[in-house]
Image 1 (spheres, rainbow, N blue to C red):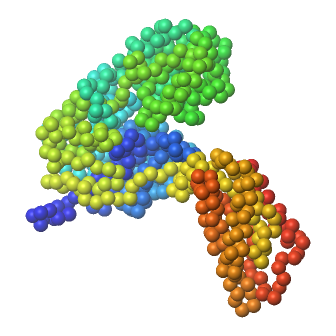
Image 2: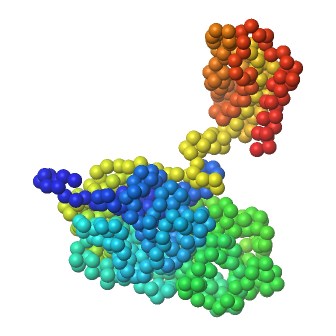
Image 3: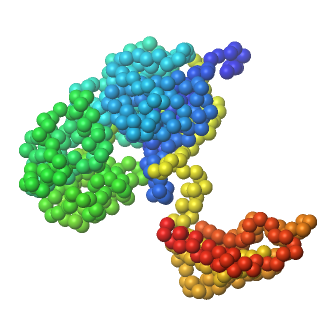
Length: 600
Protein backbone atom coordinates (compact mmCIF):
# COMPACT_ATOMS: atom_id res chain seq x y z
CA UNK A 1 0.00 0.00 0.00
CA UNK A 2 1.46 3.41 -0.99
CA UNK A 3 0.60 6.53 0.99
CA UNK A 4 0.68 10.10 -0.32
CA UNK A 5 4.26 10.55 0.91
CA UNK A 6 5.24 7.70 -1.42
CA UNK A 7 6.46 5.56 1.46
CA UNK A 8 5.32 1.95 1.51
CA UNK A 9 3.19 1.21 4.55
CA UNK A 10 1.86 -2.17 5.66
CA UNK A 11 -1.92 -2.43 5.42
CA UNK A 12 -4.37 -4.54 7.38
CA UNK A 13 -7.46 -5.56 5.45
CA UNK A 14 -10.78 -5.95 7.30
CA UNK A 15 -13.41 -7.70 5.18
CA UNK A 16 -16.88 -8.28 6.65
CA UNK A 17 -18.70 -11.03 4.75
CA UNK A 18 -21.86 -10.95 6.89
CA UNK A 19 -23.53 -9.01 9.68
CA UNK A 20 -23.61 -5.56 8.09
CA UNK A 21 -26.85 -3.92 6.91
CA UNK A 22 -28.59 -6.94 8.45
CA UNK A 23 -29.10 -8.93 11.64
CA UNK A 24 -27.35 -12.29 11.55
CA UNK A 25 -24.63 -14.30 9.75
CA UNK A 26 -21.85 -12.34 11.45
CA UNK A 27 -18.58 -13.18 9.69
CA UNK A 28 -15.43 -11.04 9.46
CA UNK A 29 -12.04 -11.59 7.79
CA UNK A 30 -8.78 -9.98 8.94
CA UNK A 31 -5.96 -10.20 6.40
CA UNK A 32 -2.36 -9.06 6.70
CA UNK A 33 0.09 -9.98 3.96
CA UNK A 34 -0.45 -13.63 3.14
CA UNK A 35 -2.22 -14.48 6.41
CA UNK A 36 -5.96 -14.55 7.18
CA UNK A 37 -7.90 -15.09 10.39
CA UNK A 38 -11.66 -15.39 10.56
CA UNK A 39 -13.75 -14.02 13.44
CA UNK A 40 -17.06 -15.90 13.80
CA UNK A 41 -19.04 -17.53 11.00
CA UNK A 42 -22.75 -17.27 11.62
CA UNK A 43 -26.01 -17.92 9.84
CA UNK A 44 -29.34 -16.16 9.40
CA UNK A 45 -32.83 -17.57 9.05
CA UNK A 46 -34.78 -17.41 5.79
CA UNK A 47 -37.44 -14.84 4.95
CA UNK A 48 -40.94 -15.91 3.90
CA UNK A 49 -40.11 -15.76 0.19
CA UNK A 50 -37.17 -18.19 0.49
CA UNK A 51 -39.20 -21.30 -0.22
CA UNK A 52 -37.74 -24.53 1.11
CA UNK A 53 -34.68 -22.79 2.58
CA UNK A 54 -33.48 -23.88 6.02
CA UNK A 55 -30.69 -21.39 6.67
CA UNK A 56 -28.93 -18.45 5.01
CA UNK A 57 -25.13 -18.22 4.90
CA UNK A 58 -22.77 -15.51 3.65
CA UNK A 59 -21.12 -16.11 0.29
CA UNK A 60 -17.66 -17.47 1.16
CA UNK A 61 -16.13 -17.30 -2.32
CA UNK A 62 -13.30 -15.07 -1.08
CA UNK A 63 -12.25 -17.57 1.56
CA UNK A 64 -12.53 -20.49 -0.85
CA UNK A 65 -10.20 -18.67 -3.22
CA UNK A 66 -7.77 -17.78 -0.42
CA UNK A 67 -7.98 -20.93 1.67
CA UNK A 68 -4.18 -21.31 1.62
CA UNK A 69 -3.87 -18.10 3.68
CA UNK A 70 -6.22 -19.13 6.53
CA UNK A 71 -4.38 -19.50 9.83
CA UNK A 72 -7.37 -20.03 12.09
CA UNK A 73 -10.69 -18.81 13.45
CA UNK A 74 -11.80 -16.93 16.56
CA UNK A 75 -15.27 -17.58 18.05
CA UNK A 76 -16.62 -14.87 20.38
CA UNK A 77 -19.69 -16.72 21.74
CA UNK A 78 -22.15 -19.51 21.02
CA UNK A 79 -25.14 -17.90 19.31
CA UNK A 80 -26.20 -19.34 15.96
CA UNK A 81 -25.61 -16.03 14.18
CA UNK A 82 -21.93 -16.40 15.15
CA UNK A 83 -21.18 -20.15 14.96
CA UNK A 84 -24.04 -21.63 12.90
CA UNK A 85 -22.23 -21.52 9.54
CA UNK A 86 -18.94 -23.14 10.57
CA UNK A 87 -19.93 -26.75 9.84
CA UNK A 88 -21.06 -25.78 6.33
CA UNK A 89 -17.91 -23.78 5.59
CA UNK A 90 -15.62 -26.60 6.67
CA UNK A 91 -17.05 -28.65 3.82
CA UNK A 92 -15.48 -26.10 1.45
CA UNK A 93 -12.17 -25.25 3.10
CA UNK A 94 -10.13 -26.31 6.11
CA UNK A 95 -9.57 -24.13 9.16
CA UNK A 96 -6.39 -25.26 11.01
CA UNK A 97 -7.61 -24.26 14.47
CA UNK A 98 -10.66 -22.68 16.11
CA UNK A 99 -10.26 -20.84 19.42
CA UNK A 100 -13.22 -19.85 21.54
CA UNK A 101 -15.06 -20.09 24.88
CA UNK A 102 -15.87 -23.51 26.27
CA UNK A 103 -19.66 -23.29 25.96
CA UNK A 104 -19.58 -22.06 22.36
CA UNK A 105 -17.09 -24.71 21.26
CA UNK A 106 -18.97 -27.47 23.09
CA UNK A 107 -22.08 -26.55 21.09
CA UNK A 108 -19.92 -26.31 17.95
CA UNK A 109 -18.43 -29.74 18.60
CA UNK A 110 -21.90 -31.29 18.35
CA UNK A 111 -22.56 -29.51 15.06
CA UNK A 112 -19.24 -30.61 13.56
CA UNK A 113 -19.69 -34.19 14.76
CA UNK A 114 -23.16 -34.37 13.23
CA UNK A 115 -21.85 -32.97 9.93
CA UNK A 116 -18.78 -35.26 9.94
CA UNK A 117 -16.45 -32.25 9.98
CA UNK A 118 -14.53 -32.77 13.23
CA UNK A 119 -11.39 -33.85 11.38
CA UNK A 120 -11.32 -30.65 9.31
CA UNK A 121 -10.20 -28.50 12.24
CA UNK A 122 -8.85 -28.49 15.80
CA UNK A 123 -10.96 -26.97 18.59
CA UNK A 124 -9.21 -25.23 21.48
CA UNK A 125 -11.00 -23.73 24.50
CA UNK A 126 -9.87 -20.43 26.00
CA UNK A 127 -10.35 -18.63 29.30
CA UNK A 128 -10.62 -14.90 30.04
CA UNK A 129 -7.40 -12.99 29.23
CA UNK A 130 -5.91 -15.94 27.35
CA UNK A 131 -3.79 -14.82 24.40
CA UNK A 132 -3.47 -17.00 21.29
CA UNK A 133 -1.20 -16.47 18.32
CA UNK A 134 -2.33 -17.14 14.75
CA UNK A 135 0.42 -17.00 12.16
CA UNK A 136 3.13 -14.34 12.40
CA UNK A 137 0.74 -11.38 12.22
CA UNK A 138 -2.03 -11.91 14.78
CA UNK A 139 -2.14 -12.25 18.56
CA UNK A 140 -5.68 -12.35 20.02
CA UNK A 141 -6.64 -11.77 23.65
CA UNK A 142 -10.05 -12.89 24.90
CA UNK A 143 -11.73 -10.34 27.19
CA UNK A 144 -14.79 -11.38 29.20
CA UNK A 145 -17.93 -9.41 28.35
CA UNK A 146 -21.61 -9.74 29.25
CA UNK A 147 -24.28 -10.82 26.77
CA UNK A 148 -27.45 -12.93 26.72
CA UNK A 149 -25.44 -16.15 26.54
CA UNK A 150 -22.89 -17.32 29.10
CA UNK A 151 -19.18 -17.42 28.28
CA UNK A 152 -19.05 -14.50 25.85
CA UNK A 153 -15.97 -12.50 24.84
CA UNK A 154 -14.75 -9.32 23.25
CA UNK A 155 -11.34 -9.63 21.59
CA UNK A 156 -8.21 -7.52 21.25
CA UNK A 157 -6.28 -8.30 18.05
CA UNK A 158 -2.65 -7.19 18.10
CA UNK A 159 -1.29 -6.76 14.57
CA UNK A 160 1.96 -5.34 13.14
CA UNK A 161 0.23 -1.95 12.66
CA UNK A 162 -1.59 -1.70 16.00
CA UNK A 163 -4.36 -3.07 18.22
CA UNK A 164 -7.90 -3.70 16.97
CA UNK A 165 -10.67 -4.10 19.55
CA UNK A 166 -13.72 -6.06 18.35
CA UNK A 167 -16.48 -6.00 20.96
CA UNK A 168 -18.50 -8.93 19.67
CA UNK A 169 -22.10 -8.86 20.85
CA UNK A 170 -22.23 -7.15 24.23
CA UNK A 171 -24.06 -5.14 26.81
CA UNK A 172 -22.64 -3.87 30.08
CA UNK A 173 -24.50 -5.81 32.77
CA UNK A 174 -23.46 -4.81 36.28
CA UNK A 175 -25.51 -7.60 37.91
CA UNK A 176 -24.91 -10.62 35.64
CA UNK A 177 -26.81 -13.77 36.53
CA UNK A 178 -23.65 -15.89 36.52
CA UNK A 179 -21.55 -13.30 38.43
CA UNK A 180 -19.12 -13.14 35.49
CA UNK A 181 -18.51 -9.41 35.11
CA UNK A 182 -17.48 -7.49 32.00
CA UNK A 183 -13.68 -7.04 32.18
CA UNK A 184 -13.84 -3.29 31.64
CA UNK A 185 -10.46 -2.91 33.37
CA UNK A 186 -8.74 -4.78 30.56
CA UNK A 187 -10.61 -2.79 27.92
CA UNK A 188 -9.48 0.43 29.64
CA UNK A 189 -5.87 -0.78 29.76
CA UNK A 190 -5.87 -1.25 26.01
CA UNK A 191 -7.41 2.20 25.65
CA UNK A 192 -4.65 3.73 27.74
CA UNK A 193 -1.96 2.04 25.62
CA UNK A 194 -3.62 3.02 22.36
CA UNK A 195 -6.29 1.35 20.22
CA UNK A 196 -5.89 1.85 16.49
CA UNK A 197 -9.46 0.83 15.55
CA UNK A 198 -12.66 -0.20 17.33
CA UNK A 199 -15.23 -2.50 15.70
CA UNK A 200 -18.33 -2.32 17.89
CA UNK A 201 -21.75 -4.02 18.04
CA UNK A 202 -24.41 -1.60 16.72
CA UNK A 203 -27.58 -3.65 17.24
CA UNK A 204 -29.19 -1.29 19.77
CA UNK A 205 -27.57 1.95 18.61
CA UNK A 206 -31.01 3.54 18.19
CA UNK A 207 -32.00 2.86 21.81
CA UNK A 208 -31.28 5.65 24.33
CA UNK A 209 -30.03 4.96 27.83
CA UNK A 210 -28.85 1.59 29.12
CA UNK A 211 -30.06 -1.93 28.38
CA UNK A 212 -31.52 -3.41 31.60
CA UNK A 213 -29.69 -6.19 33.39
CA UNK A 214 -30.70 -9.77 32.68
CA UNK A 215 -31.52 -10.01 36.38
CA UNK A 216 -34.33 -7.47 35.91
CA UNK A 217 -36.62 -10.09 34.35
CA UNK A 218 -36.54 -12.24 37.51
CA UNK A 219 -39.21 -10.40 39.57
CA UNK A 220 -41.58 -10.15 36.60
CA UNK A 221 -41.30 -13.84 35.77
CA UNK A 222 -41.60 -14.57 39.49
CA UNK A 223 -44.95 -12.74 39.55
CA UNK A 224 -46.21 -14.78 36.58
CA UNK A 225 -45.19 -18.04 38.26
CA UNK A 226 -46.96 -17.00 41.47
CA UNK A 227 -50.20 -16.07 39.68
CA UNK A 228 -50.46 -18.97 37.24
CA UNK A 229 -53.12 -21.48 38.34
CA UNK A 230 -52.42 -24.13 35.73
CA UNK A 231 -49.51 -25.24 33.59
CA UNK A 232 -46.85 -22.75 32.53
CA UNK A 233 -45.37 -23.05 29.05
CA UNK A 234 -42.40 -20.76 28.55
CA UNK A 235 -40.43 -20.20 25.37
CA UNK A 236 -37.16 -18.35 24.96
CA UNK A 237 -33.97 -18.67 22.93
CA UNK A 238 -32.37 -22.01 23.69
CA UNK A 239 -28.94 -20.36 23.94
CA UNK A 240 -30.15 -17.73 26.44
CA UNK A 241 -28.51 -19.66 29.24
CA UNK A 242 -29.00 -16.88 31.79
CA UNK A 243 -32.75 -16.73 31.06
CA UNK A 244 -33.05 -20.50 31.23
CA UNK A 245 -31.21 -20.42 34.54
CA UNK A 246 -33.73 -17.91 35.91
CA UNK A 247 -36.67 -20.05 34.75
CA UNK A 248 -35.22 -23.17 36.38
CA UNK A 249 -34.58 -21.35 39.65
CA UNK A 250 -38.19 -20.04 39.65
CA UNK A 251 -39.54 -23.52 38.95
CA UNK A 252 -37.59 -24.78 41.95
CA UNK A 253 -38.85 -21.90 44.11
CA UNK A 254 -42.50 -22.48 43.20
CA UNK A 255 -42.37 -26.27 43.45
CA UNK A 256 -42.87 -27.02 39.77
CA UNK A 257 -41.27 -29.79 37.74
CA UNK A 258 -39.68 -28.80 34.41
CA UNK A 259 -40.34 -30.68 31.18
CA UNK A 260 -38.03 -29.59 28.35
CA UNK A 261 -39.26 -29.74 24.76
CA UNK A 262 -37.11 -29.11 21.69
CA UNK A 263 -33.80 -30.64 20.68
CA UNK A 264 -31.77 -27.42 20.85
CA UNK A 265 -33.13 -26.56 24.30
CA UNK A 266 -32.29 -30.04 25.59
CA UNK A 267 -28.75 -29.86 24.16
CA UNK A 268 -27.97 -26.41 25.54
CA UNK A 269 -29.27 -27.23 29.03
CA UNK A 270 -27.31 -30.49 29.10
CA UNK A 271 -24.05 -28.80 28.08
CA UNK A 272 -24.58 -25.77 30.34
CA UNK A 273 -25.16 -28.06 33.33
CA UNK A 274 -22.07 -30.14 32.53
CA UNK A 275 -19.96 -26.99 32.30
CA UNK A 276 -21.40 -25.49 35.47
CA UNK A 277 -23.27 -22.56 33.90
CA UNK A 278 -26.59 -23.98 35.12
CA UNK A 279 -26.85 -25.47 38.59
CA UNK A 280 -29.99 -27.27 39.69
CA UNK A 281 -30.94 -30.68 41.09
CA UNK A 282 -31.52 -33.56 38.72
CA UNK A 283 -34.99 -34.23 40.09
CA UNK A 284 -36.16 -30.77 38.97
CA UNK A 285 -36.67 -32.25 35.50
CA UNK A 286 -39.31 -34.67 34.35
CA UNK A 287 -39.77 -36.38 30.96
CA UNK A 288 -42.38 -34.71 28.77
CA UNK A 289 -44.28 -38.01 28.59
CA UNK A 290 -44.89 -37.96 32.33
CA UNK A 291 -46.57 -34.54 32.61
CA UNK A 292 -50.03 -36.13 32.43
CA UNK A 293 -49.31 -37.72 35.82
CA UNK A 294 -48.39 -34.41 37.50
CA UNK A 295 -50.93 -31.75 38.59
CA UNK A 296 -51.09 -28.80 36.20
CA UNK A 297 -50.06 -26.32 38.88
CA UNK A 298 -46.85 -28.28 39.39
CA UNK A 299 -45.59 -28.20 35.78
CA UNK A 300 -43.41 -25.86 33.68
CA UNK A 301 -42.92 -26.77 30.03
CA UNK A 302 -39.76 -25.07 28.75
CA UNK A 303 -39.67 -25.05 24.97
CA UNK A 304 -38.15 -23.70 21.79
CA UNK A 305 -40.14 -21.63 19.28
CA UNK A 306 -39.95 -18.06 20.55
CA UNK A 307 -39.47 -16.85 16.95
CA UNK A 308 -42.39 -18.74 15.42
CA UNK A 309 -40.07 -21.13 13.57
CA UNK A 310 -42.13 -23.49 11.42
CA UNK A 311 -40.90 -26.78 12.90
CA UNK A 312 -40.29 -25.59 16.46
CA UNK A 313 -42.09 -27.14 19.42
CA UNK A 314 -44.14 -24.05 20.33
CA UNK A 315 -45.33 -23.57 16.74
CA UNK A 316 -46.42 -27.21 16.53
CA UNK A 317 -48.15 -26.92 19.91
CA UNK A 318 -50.05 -23.84 18.71
CA UNK A 319 -51.23 -25.77 15.65
CA UNK A 320 -52.30 -28.78 17.68
CA UNK A 321 -49.67 -30.87 15.90
CA UNK A 322 -47.45 -31.79 18.84
CA UNK A 323 -47.86 -35.42 19.85
CA UNK A 324 -47.34 -34.92 23.58
CA UNK A 325 -48.43 -31.37 24.45
CA UNK A 326 -51.92 -29.97 23.83
CA UNK A 327 -53.01 -26.49 24.90
CA UNK A 328 -56.05 -26.26 27.15
CA UNK A 329 -57.92 -23.62 29.13
CA UNK A 330 -55.98 -22.56 32.20
CA UNK A 331 -52.54 -22.79 30.57
CA UNK A 332 -50.26 -19.74 30.81
CA UNK A 333 -47.91 -19.35 27.84
CA UNK A 334 -44.96 -16.95 28.25
CA UNK A 335 -42.93 -15.53 25.35
CA UNK A 336 -39.72 -14.48 27.08
CA UNK A 337 -38.12 -13.13 23.90
CA UNK A 338 -38.63 -10.37 21.34
CA UNK A 339 -39.13 -11.19 17.66
CA UNK A 340 -36.05 -10.88 15.51
CA UNK A 341 -36.73 -8.50 12.58
CA UNK A 342 -38.52 -10.55 9.93
CA UNK A 343 -40.08 -12.98 12.41
CA UNK A 344 -42.81 -10.72 13.80
CA UNK A 345 -45.65 -12.11 11.67
CA UNK A 346 -44.77 -15.72 12.50
CA UNK A 347 -44.65 -14.89 16.22
CA UNK A 348 -47.98 -13.04 16.35
CA UNK A 349 -49.65 -15.81 14.35
CA UNK A 350 -48.40 -18.32 16.91
CA UNK A 351 -49.72 -16.15 19.76
CA UNK A 352 -53.11 -15.84 18.04
CA UNK A 353 -53.42 -19.60 17.65
CA UNK A 354 -52.52 -20.18 21.31
CA UNK A 355 -55.16 -17.67 22.43
CA UNK A 356 -57.78 -19.33 20.24
CA UNK A 357 -57.00 -22.62 21.98
CA UNK A 358 -57.79 -21.01 25.34
CA UNK A 359 -54.32 -20.18 26.68
CA UNK A 360 -53.47 -17.01 28.58
CA UNK A 361 -50.48 -15.65 26.63
CA UNK A 362 -48.00 -13.24 28.22
CA UNK A 363 -45.84 -11.34 25.73
CA UNK A 364 -44.59 -7.87 24.83
CA UNK A 365 -41.98 -5.36 26.00
CA UNK A 366 -44.30 -3.82 28.59
CA UNK A 367 -44.36 -7.06 30.59
CA UNK A 368 -40.66 -6.85 31.47
CA UNK A 369 -40.07 -10.54 30.78
CA UNK A 370 -37.34 -10.03 28.20
CA UNK A 371 -34.31 -7.78 27.93
CA UNK A 372 -31.91 -7.44 25.03
CA UNK A 373 -28.43 -8.87 25.08
CA UNK A 374 -27.09 -5.82 23.24
CA UNK A 375 -25.98 -2.52 24.71
CA UNK A 376 -27.84 0.75 24.17
CA UNK A 377 -26.43 4.20 23.46
CA UNK A 378 -24.89 4.91 26.86
CA UNK A 379 -23.06 1.57 26.76
CA UNK A 380 -21.77 2.37 23.28
CA UNK A 381 -20.50 5.70 24.54
CA UNK A 382 -18.76 4.01 27.46
CA UNK A 383 -17.05 1.56 25.13
CA UNK A 384 -15.86 4.43 22.94
CA UNK A 385 -14.66 6.35 26.01
CA UNK A 386 -12.73 3.39 27.42
CA UNK A 387 -11.05 2.34 24.18
CA UNK A 388 -10.41 5.86 22.79
CA UNK A 389 -9.81 4.49 19.27
CA UNK A 390 -8.15 6.44 16.49
CA UNK A 391 -10.46 4.87 13.91
CA UNK A 392 -13.98 3.50 14.24
CA UNK A 393 -16.02 0.97 12.27
CA UNK A 394 -19.58 0.16 13.47
CA UNK A 395 -20.55 -3.47 12.80
CA UNK A 396 -23.34 -5.95 13.58
CA UNK A 397 -26.49 -4.11 12.55
CA UNK A 398 -28.76 -2.72 9.89
CA UNK A 399 -27.78 0.45 8.04
CA UNK A 400 -29.65 2.93 10.23
CA UNK A 401 -28.01 1.37 13.32
CA UNK A 402 -24.54 1.72 11.82
CA UNK A 403 -25.25 5.37 10.94
CA UNK A 404 -26.50 6.15 14.44
CA UNK A 405 -23.47 4.50 16.00
CA UNK A 406 -21.14 6.45 13.71
CA UNK A 407 -22.85 9.70 14.75
CA UNK A 408 -22.25 8.85 18.42
CA UNK A 409 -18.57 8.24 17.73
CA UNK A 410 -18.28 11.54 15.90
CA UNK A 411 -19.98 13.37 18.77
CA UNK A 412 -17.42 11.84 21.11
CA UNK A 413 -14.53 13.33 19.20
CA UNK A 414 -13.59 10.83 16.51
CA UNK A 415 -13.15 12.77 13.25
CA UNK A 416 -15.61 11.96 10.49
CA UNK A 417 -12.79 10.96 8.14
CA UNK A 418 -11.68 8.35 10.69
CA UNK A 419 -15.04 6.54 10.62
CA UNK A 420 -16.20 4.13 7.91
CA UNK A 421 -19.66 2.65 7.34
CA UNK A 422 -19.25 -0.41 5.17
CA UNK A 423 -21.25 -3.15 3.47
CA UNK A 424 -20.66 -6.88 3.33
CA UNK A 425 -17.86 -7.50 0.87
CA UNK A 426 -16.18 -4.10 1.29
CA UNK A 427 -12.42 -4.29 1.84
CA UNK A 428 -11.38 -1.80 4.51
CA UNK A 429 -7.72 -0.84 4.27
CA UNK A 430 -6.26 0.17 7.63
CA UNK A 431 -2.84 1.70 8.23
CA UNK A 432 -1.50 3.64 11.23
CA UNK A 433 -2.57 6.87 9.53
CA UNK A 434 -5.66 6.08 7.48
CA UNK A 435 -8.83 3.99 7.17
CA UNK A 436 -10.73 3.68 3.88
CA UNK A 437 -12.71 1.33 1.68
CA UNK A 438 -10.12 0.24 -0.88
CA UNK A 439 -11.79 -2.60 -2.75
CA UNK A 440 -14.66 -5.06 -2.76
CA UNK A 441 -14.79 -8.84 -2.86
CA UNK A 442 -17.55 -11.25 -3.82
CA UNK A 443 -20.30 -11.14 -1.23
CA UNK A 444 -23.96 -12.04 -0.92
CA UNK A 445 -25.79 -15.06 0.39
CA UNK A 446 -25.81 -18.82 0.00
CA UNK A 447 -29.12 -20.57 0.66
CA UNK A 448 -29.16 -24.04 2.19
CA UNK A 449 -31.88 -26.68 2.32
CA UNK A 450 -31.68 -30.21 3.72
CA UNK A 451 -29.60 -31.36 0.73
CA UNK A 452 -27.09 -28.52 0.55
CA UNK A 453 -26.49 -25.22 -1.24
CA UNK A 454 -29.37 -24.04 -3.42
CA UNK A 455 -28.32 -22.41 -6.68
CA UNK A 456 -29.78 -19.08 -7.74
CA UNK A 457 -31.70 -20.50 -10.70
CA UNK A 458 -33.42 -23.01 -8.40
CA UNK A 459 -34.63 -20.23 -6.09
CA UNK A 460 -35.97 -18.29 -9.07
CA UNK A 461 -37.89 -21.38 -10.16
CA UNK A 462 -39.29 -21.88 -6.64
CA UNK A 463 -40.38 -18.26 -6.52
CA UNK A 464 -42.05 -18.59 -9.92
CA UNK A 465 -43.85 -21.75 -8.77
CA UNK A 466 -45.05 -20.00 -5.62
CA UNK A 467 -46.35 -16.94 -7.45
CA UNK A 468 -47.80 -18.33 -10.69
CA UNK A 469 -47.82 -22.13 -10.47
CA UNK A 470 -46.68 -24.60 -13.12
CA UNK A 471 -47.98 -25.60 -16.54
CA UNK A 472 -46.86 -28.99 -17.88
CA UNK A 473 -47.33 -29.89 -21.51
CA UNK A 474 -46.50 -33.28 -23.04
CA UNK A 475 -46.36 -33.90 -26.79
CA UNK A 476 -45.01 -36.77 -28.91
CA UNK A 477 -43.85 -36.09 -32.49
CA UNK A 478 -42.54 -38.29 -35.32
CA UNK A 479 -39.94 -37.74 -38.09
CA UNK A 480 -42.52 -35.95 -40.25
CA UNK A 481 -43.52 -33.43 -37.61
CA UNK A 482 -46.82 -35.15 -36.87
CA UNK A 483 -48.22 -35.37 -33.35
CA UNK A 484 -48.67 -39.01 -32.39
CA UNK A 485 -51.10 -38.31 -29.54
CA UNK A 486 -53.25 -35.39 -28.45
CA UNK A 487 -51.24 -32.85 -26.49
CA UNK A 488 -51.64 -33.35 -22.73
CA UNK A 489 -51.89 -30.27 -20.47
CA UNK A 490 -51.78 -30.17 -16.68
CA UNK A 491 -51.83 -27.11 -14.43
CA UNK A 492 -50.88 -26.77 -10.77
CA UNK A 493 -51.25 -23.68 -8.61
CA UNK A 494 -52.57 -21.51 -11.47
CA UNK A 495 -55.61 -19.26 -11.21
CA UNK A 496 -57.43 -19.07 -14.55
CA UNK A 497 -60.87 -18.12 -15.84
CA UNK A 498 -60.36 -20.26 -18.94
CA UNK A 499 -61.78 -23.77 -18.79
CA UNK A 500 -59.15 -26.47 -18.99
CA UNK A 501 -60.46 -28.00 -22.26
CA UNK A 502 -60.26 -24.57 -23.93
CA UNK A 503 -56.75 -24.01 -22.56
CA UNK A 504 -55.69 -27.41 -23.85
CA UNK A 505 -57.17 -26.56 -27.24
CA UNK A 506 -55.30 -23.23 -27.41
CA UNK A 507 -52.00 -24.89 -26.49
CA UNK A 508 -52.49 -27.73 -29.00
CA UNK A 509 -53.22 -25.23 -31.76
CA UNK A 510 -50.13 -23.20 -30.89
CA UNK A 511 -47.93 -26.30 -31.07
CA UNK A 512 -49.52 -27.42 -34.36
CA UNK A 513 -49.04 -23.97 -35.86
CA UNK A 514 -45.34 -23.74 -34.95
CA UNK A 515 -44.63 -27.20 -36.34
CA UNK A 516 -46.64 -26.63 -39.54
CA UNK A 517 -45.11 -23.25 -40.28
CA UNK A 518 -41.47 -23.99 -39.43
CA UNK A 519 -41.01 -27.73 -39.80
CA UNK A 520 -38.87 -27.44 -42.91
CA UNK A 521 -36.63 -24.96 -41.06
CA UNK A 522 -35.87 -27.61 -38.46
CA UNK A 523 -34.91 -30.27 -41.02
CA UNK A 524 -31.30 -30.44 -42.11
CA UNK A 525 -30.60 -32.83 -44.97
CA UNK A 526 -27.03 -34.01 -44.98
CA UNK A 527 -25.88 -36.72 -47.38
CA UNK A 528 -28.32 -39.61 -46.98
CA UNK A 529 -29.72 -38.70 -43.56
CA UNK A 530 -32.32 -36.35 -42.15
CA UNK A 531 -31.35 -34.45 -38.99
CA UNK A 532 -33.92 -32.50 -36.98
CA UNK A 533 -32.96 -29.54 -34.77
CA UNK A 534 -34.97 -30.83 -31.82
CA UNK A 535 -33.44 -28.40 -29.31
CA UNK A 536 -34.39 -25.43 -31.48
CA UNK A 537 -37.92 -26.78 -31.87
CA UNK A 538 -38.19 -27.27 -28.09
CA UNK A 539 -37.03 -23.69 -27.44
CA UNK A 540 -39.43 -22.18 -29.98
CA UNK A 541 -42.37 -24.13 -28.58
CA UNK A 542 -41.55 -23.06 -25.01
CA UNK A 543 -41.34 -19.40 -26.04
CA UNK A 544 -44.61 -19.63 -27.95
CA UNK A 545 -46.36 -21.23 -24.97
CA UNK A 546 -45.01 -18.55 -22.63
CA UNK A 547 -46.37 -15.78 -24.87
CA UNK A 548 -49.74 -17.52 -25.19
CA UNK A 549 -50.15 -18.06 -21.45
CA UNK A 550 -49.10 -14.52 -20.61
CA UNK A 551 -51.56 -13.13 -23.15
CA UNK A 552 -54.51 -15.35 -22.30
CA UNK A 553 -54.03 -15.84 -18.54
CA UNK A 554 -52.12 -12.70 -17.54
CA UNK A 555 -49.63 -14.80 -15.60
CA UNK A 556 -46.16 -16.27 -16.03
CA UNK A 557 -46.15 -19.82 -14.63
CA UNK A 558 -43.22 -22.16 -14.92
CA UNK A 559 -43.67 -24.03 -18.20
CA UNK A 560 -42.43 -27.60 -18.43
CA UNK A 561 -42.60 -28.89 -22.00
CA UNK A 562 -41.88 -32.59 -22.41
CA UNK A 563 -41.33 -33.11 -26.12
CA UNK A 564 -40.92 -36.76 -27.07
CA UNK A 565 -39.25 -37.42 -30.40
CA UNK A 566 -37.23 -40.10 -32.24
CA UNK A 567 -33.56 -40.35 -31.33
CA UNK A 568 -30.57 -40.24 -33.68
CA UNK A 569 -30.80 -39.70 -37.42
CA UNK A 570 -33.26 -41.11 -39.95
CA UNK A 571 -32.08 -42.33 -43.37
CA UNK A 572 -33.58 -40.08 -46.06
CA UNK A 573 -35.03 -42.97 -48.03
CA UNK A 574 -36.80 -44.55 -45.05
CA UNK A 575 -40.44 -44.22 -44.27
CA UNK A 576 -41.80 -42.33 -41.27
CA UNK A 577 -42.26 -44.26 -38.04
CA UNK A 578 -44.45 -47.25 -38.71
CA UNK A 579 -43.38 -49.73 -36.09
CA UNK A 580 -46.46 -50.42 -33.97
CA UNK A 581 -44.53 -50.91 -30.77
CA UNK A 582 -42.64 -47.65 -31.40
CA UNK A 583 -45.96 -45.80 -31.81
CA UNK A 584 -47.28 -47.33 -28.61
CA UNK A 585 -44.08 -46.24 -26.83
CA UNK A 586 -44.47 -42.70 -28.12
CA UNK A 587 -48.05 -42.50 -26.96
CA UNK A 588 -47.43 -43.80 -23.46
CA UNK A 589 -44.27 -41.98 -22.54
CA UNK A 590 -45.69 -38.42 -22.02
CA UNK A 591 -48.55 -39.71 -19.87
CA UNK A 592 -46.14 -41.77 -17.77
CA UNK A 593 -43.97 -38.73 -17.13
CA UNK A 594 -46.98 -36.62 -16.23
CA UNK A 595 -48.16 -39.26 -13.80
CA UNK A 596 -44.75 -39.04 -12.15
CA UNK A 597 -45.08 -35.27 -11.85
CA UNK A 598 -48.53 -35.64 -10.30
CA UNK A 599 -47.06 -37.82 -7.57
CA UNK A 600 -44.39 -35.22 -6.85
